[in-house]
Amino acid sequence: MVLRFSQLFLRTLRDNPAEAEVASHRLLVRAGYIRRAAPGIYSWLPLGLKVLAKVEAIIREEMLAIGAQEVHFPALLPKEPYEATNRWSEYGDGLFRLKDRKDADYLLAPTHEEMFTLLVKDLYNSYKDLPVTLFQIQAKYRDEARPRAGLLRGREFIMKDSYSFDMDDDGLEASYQAHRAAYIRIFERLGMEIVIVSAVSGAMGGSKSEEFLHPTQIGEDTFVRSQGGYAANVEAVTSIVPEDIDFSDAPAAEVADTPDTPTIDTLIAAANDIRSKGDRVWTAADTLKNVVLSVVLPDGGRQLVVIGVPGDRSVDLKRVEANIGAHLPFDGDLQVEQASDQDLKRHLGLVKGYIGPGLSVDSRVLGVQGSTGILYLVDPHVVNGTTWITGANIRGKHVFGLVAGRDFEWDGTIEAVEVREGDLAPDGSGPLESARGIEMGHIFQLGRKYAEALHLNVLDRNGKLSTVTMGSYGVGVTRAVAALAESNHDDRGLIWPRSVAPADVHLVAAGRGDEVFEAAATIASDLEAAGLEVIYDDREKVSPGVKFGDAELIGVPTILVVGRGLVDGEVEVKDRRTGTAENVAVEDIVEHLNRVVRGE
Ligand code: ATP
Ligand code: MG
Image (cartoon, rainbow, N blue to C red; front, side):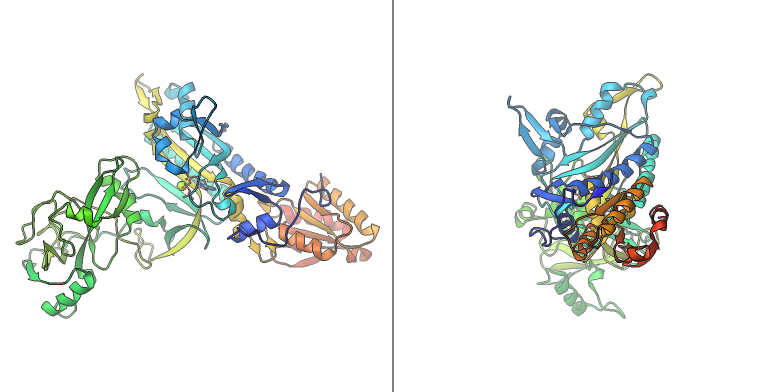
């Protein structure tokens, strides 16, 4: 069916919606794809639904192609499964909770791990049933603190979520790789540039997770990449660890009076006054800065951690949060803050401004105090044999020439310092630069966490109960529509990639006479008969200028103009992306457009 503009439920708008901060949001509203219903909640109009359906279809095809089977869960769910996994409370304010008439608790699901796990548990009980992968394309609800940028961060949004169920780690790895390859194909078909970044470092118990980011200035995620192809979330970047240094000839460490040097700058100034460093001057990089942090535990308690980092680096709390779990016996997300004065006062060994290592192990260096029982971690650059100026744990005193591995020990290493442009990628692919992106997809080896919490066990080959291992994989479907709009527009409107455009051809009848409209109508139905989707602007009392404006705003990649050239038997084909136009004979137009549309 030809979509006749005069019948189409559409009103294009000249003015930008007041609340729209980004181009995709402005244009999707102005071109009549979506309407706002409430903050972060949108209604879909006919053109919008067409694009959405095409995005969904591509995702569905690629999921089916890896053997995933489609199911559909309700969005409205009882509390109990989410209580079993602790997410009813863990989700905090992000969860939409509600009650039914009998006062029972319900929620609008933010994601569906629990339901998929329970469904498989309901129906399957043997290794013979596995592996299996299930998916759905369905609305999710999250009461985002900052719904933003239209569909990019909604409170209701559509996600494709899939879940794999395997007996063992090899199976999980295979399911994960199948999804990874499917996601690459999905974004290729959507015409969307993607950078795959590892999301958590190996420190997180080996669980693997990668995010598919679409690079764009308006993205909320920062990541780093190298020319050589390395890409990672800042949290997941790892350092190139230097070799140990032989310290057998290193001179003994010495404690020096350094009054009024509580900061690295004051310390460096004092250090250069006190003693020379041969042909160089002391810099912040020669100092070991010991930063006291407070980890907020799941029960609300606070545990202090001291992290030793080169003094020219600052600590990135997000990186610490991502990596501290490996050093503490707690599950779940841990929050990390700068230690407060209150925290410091509880540990008499901590002398603010003069904190040194030797906190959890007795240091052999004279004057440095012994154990305070605080976990002491260091940056991976602190290897055996490195020599430091650092605090002596005594007010007004620092130690010079303190040798790692000889004069002090540590409980572990942690990636804690901020990643800088120019730092080297861990895989040797060159210096890092930082960039911004939108998270479009996320693939995650969950392992047995949900299966354990919800008792998803099946009989293995030997008749023993074995816990199933799972993966979860998400793509933001409505977010993809917005991201495509964001990266495919100019100041006149949208410019859809062909694979998701609401039509193949936008036909504009630009003229007054009946002949123009009759010829245009015939061409429109011929194109449809040839299998092309057509929007036909058949409005009679609307000027060509307005029609062209609407066509450019709506963003179908090919605009066909039937008008002035008709007397010479010609119509005009315009490429919305390049702005180029060419005249084509009326009798050739179907074949010509067929080639244009299918050739891409
Ligand atoms: P973000 O970091 O952007 O909040 P997330 O890590 O919380 O996303 P996941 O739980 O991994 O998101 O969800 C899978 C996918 O769903 C994301 O990769 C993203 O494409 C999409 N998504 C998540 N939250 C939203 C939202 N509020 N609006 C639209 N899409 C979303
Ligand atoms: Mg994610």
